[in-house]
Amino acid sequence: MSDGSTSDELATRLRALADRLEPGDRLPSSRELIQQYRVGPATVARAIALLAAEGTVVTRPGSGTYVATRARQEKGAVDTAWQTVALTDRAVDTRLIAEPPGPEPAGTITMGGGYIHRSLQPTRALSAALARAARRPDAWDRATASGLPELRAVFARIAGGGVTPEDVLVTAGGQSALSIAFRAIAGPGSPVLVESPGYPGALAAARAAGLRLVPVPVDADGVRPDLLADAFAMTGARLFYCQPTFHNPTGAVLAPERRRQVLDVARASGAFVVEDDFARHLGHGGPVPRPLSVDDGDGTVVHVTSLTKPVAPSMRIGALVARGPVMERMRAVRLVDDFFVTRPLQEAALELLSSPAWDRHVRVLGDRLRERCARLAAALTAGLPTAAVRNVPAGGLHLWLRLPPGVDDTELTAAARRRGVAVSAGSRYFATEPPTEAHLRLGFAATADLAELDEGVRRLGAALRDVGGA
Image (cartoon, rainbow, N blue to C red; front, side, top):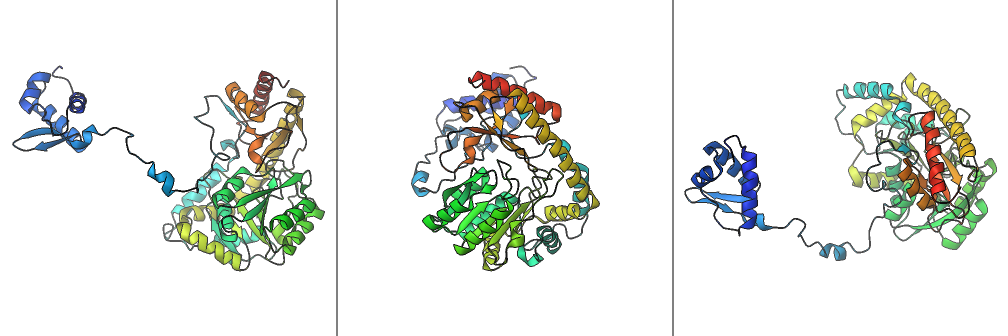
């Protein structure tokens, strides 16, 4: 080793030497190291100090430097088998919502996600709102468990139907709201009725709460009330989860005549309806149906809303709207979970929702989503003639594509990823076995532009040919 060698290089040499020795063995003296490696005293001292700090060696003044006991421990040698017994069977299944294994290859077109592209986000307005919020003298003070009163008032106004700020609980996004609602309403082992197909995040949250999923089929007009009534009668369930507006993944809107039927069936069963209104601000320029909660006069509906989808992935602000003892239960769950939602983010959300830029953003976003939705539907019709889009929705972020007979959705998803386009297998959206017809959920909001949508369909068509579907 030359005089220019660093203490890090010497430390590497000595670390390897310590690994070959036994705990308690003495390392060469500083004088011996200086002679052997042809370095200066300062380099030796720094190397020994580094090894001592990381626990590889121990120094004994007047005696020397010795190999520490921990230097012989093997990485990954800790025996954690006991944890399998201690944890019992309360595993949390995240397969429905986990990201695909490994990072997406460079150049992959994202058509499987549930967020809008950065170019569609109100970045300037959001940054300004966050800056204004940060300048508040009380920005870092504790917030109440229910959320800032002013923000709750805004969410109450959006929900409509006579909702007051006292009926609103601010949450850390829609997923947190669902988790709170499921745990507050139903105990472990209880049945919960869910739409089939339905939102995987809700299915995962319900399972994590220990609930037993009972699927109820959805058609072009939303959930079928006759089958919903049957499911309540057979299971004794006291909870039904649904997305009546621009349903994920099908895009269906619950038909007007079914809205009253769903509420009547739930009320007759003494059950709650958790209404996931995630797409309230994702209409494509036309009128958006009012929430189910507006027509609820008995506290049957627990309404969930969120700013994450129409704003940005990290705008983790949502709300639960409910009346009666169920709200107190949900407040208790949120208090035990994390006390309150971070105040600066609540303040930023309030600034954004209260600014003229918010209505403008929702209007522009709707126009762009409508354009993208139509473009994707047309590209799929032209490029994948053996597949079919049954419904072109008037809101939301996705299309539900029926695949040709004999095509496996998971196999096609893997082939598409190899072709450089990320899509979502339809089987993820079913609580139990999927139907014989396979589907993909395709997003049109996460791509950079319309041209990328066209290219994504071209790659998907190539992947479909790879698996023998075209």
